[in-house]
Amino acid sequence: MISIKNLHKKFGNLHVLRGVDLKVEEREVVVIIGPSGSGKSTILRCINYLEEPSEGEIIVDGITLNKQESVINKVRAEVGMVFQRFNLFPHMTVLENIELAPVKVRKMSAKEAETVALDLLDKVGLADKAHAYPEQLSGGQQQRVAIARALAMRPRVMLFDEPTSALDPEMVKEVLDVMKTLVKDGMTMVVVTHEMGFAREVGSRVIFIDEGRIIEEGTPNEVFYNAKEERTKTFLSKIL
Amino acid sequence: MNFDFDLIINSIPLLILGAGVTLQITLLSVGFGMFIGMFMGMARLSKIWAVKMVATVYVDFIRGTPLLVQIFLMYFALPVVTGQRIDPFVAAVTACSINSGAYIAEIFRGGIQSIDKGQMEAGRSLGMSWPQTMRYIILPQAFKRIIPPLGNEFIAMLKDSSLVSVIGFEELTRRGQLIIARTYGSFEIWMTVAFLYLIMTLTISRLVDYLERRYKIDDKH
Ligand SMILES: Nc1ncnc2c1ncn2[C@@H]1O[C@H](COP(=O)(O)OP(=O)(O)O)[C@@H](O)[C@H]1O
Ligand SMILES: [Mg+2]
Image (tube, rainbow over all chains, first blue to last red; front, side):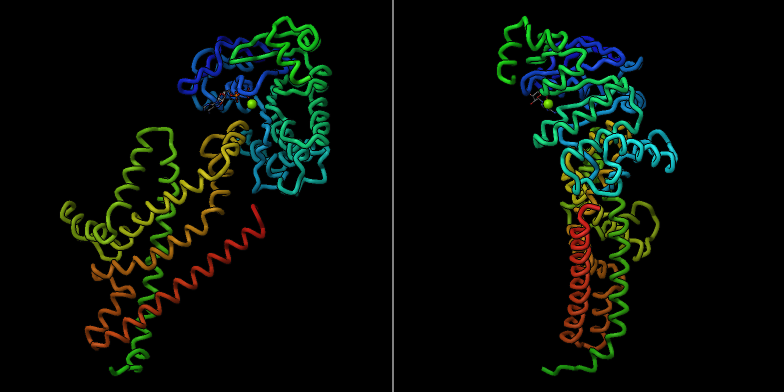
Protein backbone atom coordinates (compact mmCIF):
# COMPACT_ATOMS: atom_id res chain seq x y z
CA MET A 1 0.00 0.00 0.00
CA ILE A 2 2.86 2.34 0.87
CA SER A 3 6.41 1.84 -0.28
CA ILE A 4 9.17 4.21 0.76
CA LYS A 5 12.67 3.82 -0.63
CA ASN A 6 15.75 5.67 0.55
CA LEU A 7 13.83 8.69 1.81
CA HIS A 8 15.94 11.70 2.72
CA LYS A 9 14.69 15.04 3.96
CA LYS A 10 16.78 18.10 4.64
CA PHE A 11 15.62 21.39 6.11
CA GLY A 12 18.44 23.64 5.00
CA ASN A 13 21.49 22.15 6.64
CA LEU A 14 19.46 19.98 8.95
CA HIS A 15 19.46 16.42 7.65
CA VAL A 16 16.29 15.12 9.28
CA LEU A 17 15.63 11.86 7.41
CA ARG A 18 18.71 9.89 6.44
CA GLY A 19 17.59 7.07 4.20
CA VAL A 20 14.32 5.58 5.37
CA ASP A 21 13.00 2.41 3.75
CA LEU A 22 9.54 1.32 4.72
CA LYS A 23 6.82 -0.87 3.30
CA VAL A 24 3.30 -0.91 4.62
CA GLU A 25 1.05 -3.68 3.37
CA GLU A 26 -2.69 -3.45 3.06
CA ARG A 27 -4.45 -3.78 6.43
CA GLU A 28 -1.23 -3.40 8.32
CA VAL A 29 -1.03 -1.16 11.37
CA VAL A 30 2.48 0.20 11.64
CA VAL A 31 3.39 2.02 14.84
CA ILE A 32 6.31 4.44 14.76
CA ILE A 33 8.09 5.32 17.98
CA GLY A 34 11.19 7.36 18.65
CA PRO A 35 12.54 10.36 20.52
CA SER A 36 11.23 13.84 19.91
CA GLY A 37 12.88 15.38 16.86
CA SER A 38 13.87 12.01 15.39
CA GLY A 39 11.81 12.61 12.23
CA LYS A 40 8.59 10.68 12.90
CA SER A 41 6.28 13.48 11.83
CA THR A 42 8.45 14.23 8.83
CA ILE A 43 8.03 10.67 7.54
CA LEU A 44 4.25 10.93 7.73
CA ARG A 45 4.31 14.37 6.17
CA CYS A 46 6.39 13.13 3.26
CA ILE A 47 3.91 10.33 2.61
CA ASN A 48 1.22 12.88 1.74
CA TYR A 49 3.71 15.44 0.45
CA LEU A 50 3.09 18.07 3.10
CA GLU A 51 6.88 18.00 2.98
CA GLU A 52 8.73 17.50 -0.26
CA PRO A 53 11.28 14.69 0.04
CA SER A 54 14.86 15.74 -0.71
CA GLU A 55 15.60 12.34 -2.14
CA GLY A 56 13.98 8.94 -2.48
CA GLU A 57 10.84 7.37 -3.83
CA ILE A 58 7.40 7.10 -2.31
CA ILE A 59 4.64 5.00 -3.84
CA VAL A 60 1.15 5.16 -2.36
CA ASP A 61 -1.55 2.83 -3.62
CA GLY A 62 0.32 2.37 -6.88
CA ILE A 63 0.89 6.09 -7.48
CA THR A 64 4.47 7.33 -7.48
CA LEU A 65 4.57 10.71 -5.81
CA ASN A 66 6.09 13.67 -7.58
CA LYS A 67 5.84 17.44 -7.59
CA GLN A 68 2.78 17.52 -9.84
CA GLU A 69 -0.23 19.07 -8.12
CA SER A 70 -2.65 16.64 -9.71
CA VAL A 71 -0.66 13.65 -8.51
CA ILE A 72 -0.26 15.09 -5.02
CA ASN A 73 -3.95 15.87 -4.67
CA LYS A 74 -4.85 12.43 -5.91
CA VAL A 75 -2.64 10.77 -3.32
CA ARG A 76 -3.87 13.06 -0.57
CA ALA A 77 -7.44 12.15 -1.34
CA GLU A 78 -6.50 8.50 -0.67
CA VAL A 79 -4.48 9.22 2.44
CA GLY A 80 -6.24 10.52 5.53
CA MET A 81 -4.23 12.39 8.13
CA VAL A 82 -4.95 13.08 11.76
CA PHE A 83 -2.86 15.70 13.52
CA GLN A 84 -1.72 16.05 17.07
CA ARG A 85 -3.54 19.37 17.37
CA PHE A 86 -6.71 18.27 15.53
CA ASN A 87 -6.72 21.23 13.13
CA LEU A 88 -10.47 21.34 12.80
CA PHE A 89 -11.85 24.31 10.89
CA PRO A 90 -13.08 26.62 13.68
CA HIS A 91 -15.47 28.62 11.50
CA MET A 92 -17.47 25.56 10.48
CA THR A 93 -19.77 23.24 12.35
CA VAL A 94 -18.74 19.66 12.94
CA LEU A 95 -20.93 18.57 10.06
CA GLU A 96 -19.47 21.19 7.69
CA ASN A 97 -15.96 20.19 8.70
CA ILE A 98 -16.66 16.65 7.59
CA GLU A 99 -18.65 17.47 4.44
CA LEU A 100 -16.29 20.03 2.94
CA ALA A 101 -13.67 17.83 1.29
CA PRO A 102 -16.05 15.14 -0.01
CA VAL A 103 -18.11 17.87 -1.71
CA LYS A 104 -15.16 19.88 -3.05
CA VAL A 105 -12.79 17.05 -3.93
CA ARG A 106 -14.94 13.97 -4.46
CA LYS A 107 -17.74 16.08 -5.97
CA MET A 108 -20.29 14.40 -3.75
CA SER A 109 -23.73 16.00 -3.64
CA ALA A 110 -24.55 17.90 -0.45
CA LYS A 111 -27.18 15.33 0.42
CA GLU A 112 -24.83 12.41 -0.04
CA ALA A 113 -22.08 14.14 1.94
CA GLU A 114 -24.44 14.75 4.80
CA THR A 115 -25.43 11.12 4.92
CA VAL A 116 -21.79 10.09 4.96
CA ALA A 117 -20.94 12.67 7.63
CA LEU A 118 -23.80 11.71 9.95
CA ASP A 119 -22.89 8.08 9.52
CA LEU A 120 -19.30 8.73 10.51
CA LEU A 121 -20.29 10.91 13.45
CA ASP A 122 -22.37 8.03 14.66
CA LYS A 123 -19.37 5.76 14.28
CA VAL A 124 -17.15 8.02 16.39
CA GLY A 125 -19.93 8.48 18.95
CA LEU A 126 -20.71 12.11 18.29
CA ALA A 127 -24.00 12.04 16.43
CA ASP A 128 -25.42 14.62 18.82
CA LYS A 129 -22.63 17.12 18.08
CA ALA A 130 -23.28 17.54 14.35
CA HIS A 131 -24.21 21.19 14.68
CA ALA A 132 -21.72 22.17 17.36
CA TYR A 133 -18.63 24.23 16.60
CA PRO A 134 -15.21 22.74 17.34
CA GLU A 135 -14.54 25.13 20.24
CA GLN A 136 -17.59 23.76 22.02
CA LEU A 137 -16.08 20.28 22.10
CA SER A 138 -13.52 18.70 24.38
CA GLY A 139 -10.14 17.73 22.99
CA GLY A 140 -11.11 14.09 22.73
CA GLN A 141 -14.29 14.96 20.89
CA GLN A 142 -12.42 17.26 18.53
CA GLN A 143 -9.97 14.54 17.69
CA ARG A 144 -12.78 12.10 17.00
CA VAL A 145 -14.33 14.65 14.64
CA ALA A 146 -10.94 15.02 12.96
CA ILE A 147 -10.85 11.27 12.43
CA ALA A 148 -14.37 11.33 10.99
CA ARG A 149 -13.36 14.21 8.71
CA ALA A 150 -10.45 12.21 7.33
CA LEU A 151 -12.59 9.10 6.93
CA ALA A 152 -15.22 10.98 4.94
CA MET A 153 -12.85 10.96 1.99
CA ARG A 154 -12.92 7.17 2.10
CA PRO A 155 -9.13 6.99 2.29
CA ARG A 156 -7.20 3.80 1.66
CA VAL A 157 -4.64 4.68 4.31
CA MET A 158 -4.78 6.67 7.52
CA LEU A 159 -1.82 8.50 9.03
CA PHE A 160 -1.95 9.46 12.70
CA ASP A 161 0.64 11.86 14.12
CA GLU A 162 0.58 11.53 17.92
CA PRO A 163 -3.22 11.72 17.93
CA THR A 164 -3.54 11.51 21.70
CA SER A 165 -0.55 13.43 22.97
CA ALA A 166 -2.35 16.77 23.15
CA LEU A 167 -5.20 15.24 25.14
CA ASP A 168 -5.95 15.12 28.83
CA PRO A 169 -5.39 11.57 30.08
CA GLU A 170 -9.08 10.83 30.56
CA MET A 171 -9.75 11.50 26.87
CA VAL A 172 -7.04 9.31 25.44
CA LYS A 173 -9.09 6.15 25.63
CA GLU A 174 -12.07 7.44 23.66
CA VAL A 175 -9.77 8.34 20.76
CA LEU A 176 -7.82 5.07 20.89
CA ASP A 177 -11.11 3.17 20.96
CA VAL A 178 -12.20 4.85 17.75
CA MET A 179 -8.86 4.00 16.18
CA LYS A 180 -9.24 0.39 17.22
CA THR A 181 -12.59 0.16 15.46
CA LEU A 182 -10.80 1.31 12.30
CA VAL A 183 -8.28 -1.48 12.73
CA LYS A 184 -11.16 -3.95 13.02
CA ASP A 185 -12.60 -2.58 9.79
CA GLY A 186 -9.29 -3.43 8.13
CA MET A 187 -7.96 0.09 7.62
CA THR A 188 -4.30 0.41 6.71
CA MET A 189 -2.72 2.69 9.29
CA VAL A 190 0.59 4.33 10.13
CA VAL A 191 0.51 5.64 13.67
CA VAL A 192 3.09 7.72 15.48
CA THR A 193 2.31 7.16 19.14
CA HIS A 194 3.84 6.26 22.43
CA GLU A 195 0.71 4.49 23.61
CA MET A 196 2.28 1.10 24.18
CA GLY A 197 -1.01 -0.53 25.09
CA PHE A 198 -2.46 0.45 21.73
CA ALA A 199 0.66 -0.69 19.89
CA ARG A 200 0.66 -4.07 21.58
CA GLU A 201 -3.04 -4.63 21.09
CA VAL A 202 -3.44 -3.72 17.43
CA GLY A 203 0.00 -2.99 16.00
CA SER A 204 1.22 -5.39 13.34
CA ARG A 205 4.68 -3.87 13.48
CA VAL A 206 6.59 -1.39 15.57
CA ILE A 207 9.33 0.75 14.11
CA PHE A 208 11.86 2.56 16.24
CA ILE A 209 13.41 5.56 14.61
CA ASP A 210 16.25 7.73 15.85
CA GLU A 211 18.10 10.58 14.17
CA GLY A 212 16.29 10.04 10.91
CA ARG A 213 17.01 6.33 10.53
CA ILE A 214 15.05 3.19 11.26
CA ILE A 215 17.03 1.58 14.06
CA GLU A 216 14.87 -1.42 14.74
CA GLU A 217 11.62 -2.96 13.64
CA GLY A 218 9.57 -5.99 14.54
CA THR A 219 6.39 -7.15 16.18
CA PRO A 220 5.35 -5.13 19.24
CA ASN A 221 6.63 -7.88 21.55
CA GLU A 222 9.97 -8.14 19.79
CA VAL A 223 10.61 -4.42 19.96
CA PHE A 224 9.20 -3.72 23.40
CA TYR A 225 10.56 -6.75 25.26
CA ASN A 226 13.41 -8.13 23.19
CA ALA A 227 14.99 -5.07 21.65
CA LYS A 228 18.33 -5.87 20.05
CA GLU A 229 19.67 -2.35 19.73
CA GLU A 230 21.05 -0.47 22.69
CA ARG A 231 19.43 2.78 21.53
CA THR A 232 16.01 1.15 21.45
CA LYS A 233 16.45 -0.18 24.97
CA THR A 234 17.56 3.21 26.28
CA PHE A 235 14.58 4.90 24.66
CA LEU A 236 12.10 2.30 25.90
CA SER A 237 13.45 2.50 29.45
CA LYS A 238 12.52 6.17 29.41
CA ILE A 239 8.95 5.77 28.28
CA LEU A 240 7.78 2.40 29.63
CA MET B 1 -14.61 88.41 12.54
CA ASN B 2 -18.08 88.00 11.16
CA PHE B 3 -19.46 84.51 11.33
CA ASP B 4 -21.85 84.06 8.43
CA PHE B 5 -24.26 81.35 9.52
CA ASP B 6 -26.47 81.75 6.47
CA LEU B 7 -23.55 80.90 4.26
CA ILE B 8 -23.26 77.53 6.00
CA ILE B 9 -26.97 76.86 5.67
CA ASN B 10 -26.92 77.77 2.01
CA SER B 11 -23.82 75.74 1.22
CA ILE B 12 -24.76 72.63 3.14
CA PRO B 13 -26.79 70.96 0.36
CA LEU B 14 -23.92 71.33 -2.09
CA LEU B 15 -21.39 70.16 0.44
CA ILE B 16 -23.48 67.15 1.37
CA LEU B 17 -23.63 66.21 -2.29
CA GLY B 18 -19.84 66.52 -2.28
CA ALA B 19 -19.66 64.30 0.78
CA GLY B 20 -21.76 61.77 -1.11
CA VAL B 21 -19.26 61.84 -3.95
CA THR B 22 -16.42 61.40 -1.46
CA LEU B 23 -18.18 58.42 0.02
CA GLN B 24 -18.79 57.00 -3.42
CA ILE B 25 -15.20 57.29 -4.55
CA THR B 26 -14.03 55.80 -1.24
CA LEU B 27 -16.43 52.87 -1.49
CA LEU B 28 -15.39 52.17 -5.06
CA SER B 29 -11.68 52.51 -4.32
CA VAL B 30 -11.71 50.37 -1.20
CA GLY B 31 -13.95 47.86 -3.00
CA PHE B 32 -11.56 47.50 -5.94
CA GLY B 33 -8.70 47.81 -3.46
CA MET B 34 -9.97 44.78 -1.57
CA PHE B 35 -10.13 42.78 -4.75
CA ILE B 36 -6.60 43.81 -5.73
CA GLY B 37 -5.36 43.50 -2.16
CA MET B 38 -6.71 40.01 -1.64
CA PHE B 39 -4.83 38.67 -4.65
CA MET B 40 -1.72 40.73 -4.04
CA GLY B 41 -1.71 39.70 -0.39
CA MET B 42 -1.80 36.05 -1.41
CA ALA B 43 0.82 36.71 -4.08
CA ARG B 44 3.13 38.15 -1.42
CA LEU B 45 2.99 34.73 0.24
CA SER B 46 3.50 32.75 -2.96
CA LYS B 47 6.29 30.25 -3.27
CA ILE B 48 6.65 31.22 -6.91
CA TRP B 49 9.44 33.77 -7.05
CA ALA B 50 8.09 35.86 -9.96
CA VAL B 51 4.61 36.14 -8.47
CA LYS B 52 5.99 37.21 -5.13
CA MET B 53 8.32 39.70 -6.80
CA VAL B 54 5.56 41.41 -8.78
CA ALA B 55 3.47 41.80 -5.64
CA THR B 56 6.40 43.08 -3.61
CA VAL B 57 7.37 45.68 -6.19
CA TYR B 58 3.75 46.84 -6.42
CA VAL B 59 3.30 47.15 -2.66
CA ASP B 60 6.68 48.85 -2.14
CA PHE B 61 6.15 51.31 -4.98
CA ILE B 62 2.68 52.36 -3.87
CA ARG B 63 3.50 52.58 -0.18
CA GLY B 64 6.76 54.35 -0.87
CA THR B 65 5.34 57.17 -2.97
CA PRO B 66 2.76 59.86 -2.10
CA LEU B 67 -0.82 59.33 -3.19
CA LEU B 68 -0.76 62.84 -4.63
CA VAL B 69 2.07 61.89 -6.97
CA GLN B 70 0.22 58.70 -7.92
CA ILE B 71 -2.83 60.78 -8.82
CA PHE B 72 -0.65 63.07 -10.97
CA LEU B 73 0.92 60.05 -12.64
CA MET B 74 -2.50 58.66 -13.46
CA TYR B 75 -4.07 61.93 -14.60
CA PHE B 76 -1.21 63.83 -16.25
CA ALA B 77 1.62 61.38 -16.97
CA LEU B 78 -0.32 58.39 -18.25
CA PRO B 79 -2.13 60.36 -21.03
CA VAL B 80 1.29 61.47 -22.32
CA VAL B 81 2.13 57.84 -22.92
CA THR B 82 -1.26 56.67 -24.21
CA GLY B 83 -2.22 59.86 -26.04
CA GLN B 84 -5.70 59.54 -24.50
CA ARG B 85 -7.17 62.07 -22.09
CA ILE B 86 -8.52 60.45 -18.99
CA ASP B 87 -11.70 61.35 -17.19
CA PRO B 88 -11.04 62.82 -13.70
CA PHE B 89 -13.45 60.40 -12.06
CA VAL B 90 -11.84 57.38 -13.71
CA ALA B 91 -8.38 58.70 -12.88
CA ALA B 92 -9.36 59.37 -9.27
CA VAL B 93 -10.95 55.98 -8.68
CA THR B 94 -8.15 54.12 -10.47
CA ALA B 95 -5.38 55.89 -8.54
CA CYS B 96 -7.15 55.46 -5.22
CA SER B 97 -7.96 51.79 -5.90
CA ILE B 98 -4.39 50.97 -6.81
CA ASN B 99 -3.22 52.86 -3.74
CA SER B 100 -5.69 51.21 -1.42
CA GLY B 101 -4.91 47.81 -2.93
CA ALA B 102 -1.32 47.99 -1.73
CA TYR B 103 -2.26 48.75 1.86
CA ILE B 104 -5.01 46.15 1.81
CA ALA B 105 -2.55 43.60 0.37
CA GLU B 106 -0.49 44.00 3.51
CA ILE B 107 -3.60 43.67 5.65
CA PHE B 108 -4.55 40.43 3.88
CA ARG B 109 -1.02 39.12 4.09
CA GLY B 110 -1.00 39.72 7.84
CA GLY B 111 -4.43 38.16 8.23
CA ILE B 112 -3.53 35.07 6.25
CA GLN B 113 -0.26 34.66 8.13
CA SER B 114 -2.09 34.92 11.43
CA ILE B 115 -4.07 31.76 10.65
CA ASP B 116 -2.49 28.64 12.13
CA LYS B 117 -0.39 26.74 9.60
CA GLY B 118 -2.24 23.58 10.60
CA GLN B 119 -5.35 24.90 8.85
CA MET B 120 -3.70 24.92 5.44
CA GLU B 121 -2.16 21.51 6.13
CA ALA B 122 -5.49 20.06 7.21
CA GLY B 123 -7.14 21.33 4.03
CA ARG B 124 -4.34 20.12 1.79
CA SER B 125 -4.16 16.75 3.52
CA LEU B 126 -7.82 16.21 2.61
CA GLY B 127 -6.92 16.57 -1.06
CA MET B 128 -8.16 20.11 -1.52
CA SER B 129 -6.08 22.31 -3.80
CA TRP B 130 -4.32 25.44 -2.58
CA PRO B 131 -6.99 27.77 -4.02
CA GLN B 132 -9.79 25.66 -2.54
CA THR B 133 -8.16 25.68 0.88
CA MET B 134 -7.63 29.42 0.65
CA ARG B 135 -11.18 30.02 -0.47
CA TYR B 136 -13.03 27.83 2.03
CA ILE B 137 -10.72 27.65 5.02
CA ILE B 138 -8.08 30.36 5.25
CA LEU B 139 -9.75 33.48 3.82
CA PRO B 140 -13.02 33.18 5.76
CA GLN B 141 -11.07 33.04 9.00
CA ALA B 142 -8.59 35.71 7.96
CA PHE B 143 -11.37 38.02 6.84
CA LYS B 144 -12.94 38.20 10.27
CA ARG B 145 -9.61 39.11 11.80
CA ILE B 146 -8.88 41.91 9.36
CA ILE B 147 -12.16 43.79 9.77
CA PRO B 148 -10.59 46.37 12.13
CA PRO B 149 -7.59 47.21 9.93
CA LEU B 150 -9.84 47.23 6.86
CA GLY B 151 -12.06 49.73 8.67
CA ASN B 152 -9.01 51.87 9.36
CA GLU B 153 -8.00 51.69 5.73
CA PHE B 154 -11.49 52.76 4.71
CA ILE B 155 -11.29 55.78 7.01
CA ALA B 156 -7.79 56.64 5.80
CA MET B 157 -8.96 56.43 2.17
CA LEU B 158 -11.98 58.58 2.90
CA LYS B 159 -9.70 61.32 4.21
CA ASP B 160 -7.01 60.88 1.57
CA SER B 161 -9.58 61.02 -1.22
CA SER B 162 -9.59 64.79 -0.62
CA LEU B 163 -6.38 64.77 -2.65
CA VAL B 164 -8.26 64.06 -5.87
CA SER B 165 -9.59 67.62 -5.61
CA VAL B 166 -6.31 68.65 -7.27
CA ILE B 167 -7.38 67.16 -10.58
CA GLY B 168 -10.62 69.05 -10.37
CA PHE B 169 -12.76 66.16 -9.36
CA GLU B 170 -15.68 67.55 -7.38
CA GLU B 171 -15.76 65.66 -4.14
CA LEU B 172 -16.22 67.29 -0.76
CA THR B 173 -12.96 69.22 -0.54
CA ARG B 174 -13.19 70.51 -4.11
CA ARG B 175 -16.78 71.65 -3.57
CA GLY B 176 -15.58 73.58 -0.51
CA GLN B 177 -12.86 75.26 -2.54
CA LEU B 178 -15.32 76.23 -5.24
CA ILE B 179 -17.80 77.73 -2.79
CA ILE B 180 -15.01 79.70 -1.11
CA ALA B 181 -13.84 81.03 -4.47
CA ARG B 182 -17.30 82.47 -4.93
CA THR B 183 -18.11 83.64 -1.40
CA TYR B 184 -14.77 84.16 0.38
CA GLY B 185 -16.23 82.38 3.42
CA SER B 186 -13.07 80.49 4.14
CA PHE B 187 -13.60 79.91 7.83
CA GLU B 188 -17.24 78.83 7.66
CA ILE B 189 -16.79 76.53 4.71
CA TRP B 190 -13.62 74.79 5.83
CA MET B 191 -15.17 74.23 9.28
CA THR B 192 -18.22 72.73 7.66
CA VAL B 193 -16.13 70.57 5.36
CA ALA B 194 -14.08 69.32 8.33
CA PHE B 195 -17.26 68.62 10.26
CA LEU B 196 -18.72 66.57 7.41
CA TYR B 197 -15.53 64.48 7.17
CA LEU B 198 -15.67 63.97 10.90
CA ILE B 199 -19.27 62.76 10.83
CA MET B 200 -18.40 60.25 8.12
CA THR B 201 -15.26 58.91 9.79
CA LEU B 202 -16.90 58.64 13.22
CA THR B 203 -19.90 56.83 11.78
CA ILE B 204 -17.69 54.37 9.96
CA SER B 205 -15.52 53.68 12.96
CA ARG B 206 -18.64 52.98 15.06
CA LEU B 207 -19.88 50.66 12.35
CA VAL B 208 -16.57 48.79 12.30
CA ASP B 209 -16.61 48.50 16.11
CA TYR B 210 -20.08 47.05 15.89
CA LEU B 211 -19.10 44.52 13.22
CA GLU B 212 -16.06 43.52 15.20
CA ARG B 213 -18.06 43.03 18.36
CA ARG B 214 -20.71 41.04 16.54
CA TYR B 215 -18.08 38.66 15.20
CA LYS B 216 -16.53 38.38 18.65
CA ILE B 217 -19.84 37.40 20.23
CA ASP B 218 -20.61 34.94 17.47
CA ASP B 219 -17.00 34.07 17.88
CA LYS B 220 -15.47 32.31 15.02
CA HIS B 221 -18.43 31.49 12.89
N1 LIG C 1 9.50 22.87 8.52
C1 LIG C 1 10.66 22.63 9.19
N2 LIG C 1 11.70 23.46 9.05
C2 LIG C 1 12.86 23.23 9.71
N3 LIG C 1 13.05 22.19 10.53
C3 LIG C 1 12.05 21.32 10.70
C4 LIG C 1 10.79 21.50 10.06
N4 LIG C 1 9.98 20.49 10.42
C5 LIG C 1 10.69 19.72 11.27
N5 LIG C 1 11.94 20.21 11.43
C6 LIG C 1 12.98 19.62 12.25
O1 LIG C 1 13.16 18.29 11.85
C7 LIG C 1 13.42 17.46 12.95
C8 LIG C 1 12.45 16.32 12.96
O2 LIG C 1 11.16 16.83 13.20
P1 LIG C 1 9.90 15.90 13.36
O3 LIG C 1 9.77 15.02 12.17
O4 LIG C 1 8.76 16.78 13.66
O5 LIG C 1 10.27 15.04 14.63
P2 LIG C 1 9.34 14.13 15.54
O6 LIG C 1 7.97 14.13 14.97
O7 LIG C 1 9.99 12.80 15.55
O8 LIG C 1 9.38 14.77 16.91
C9 LIG C 1 13.38 18.34 14.19
O9 LIG C 1 14.67 18.69 14.54
C10 LIG C 1 12.61 19.55 13.72
O10 LIG C 1 13.03 20.69 14.42
MG1 LIG D 1 6.18 14.88 15.74
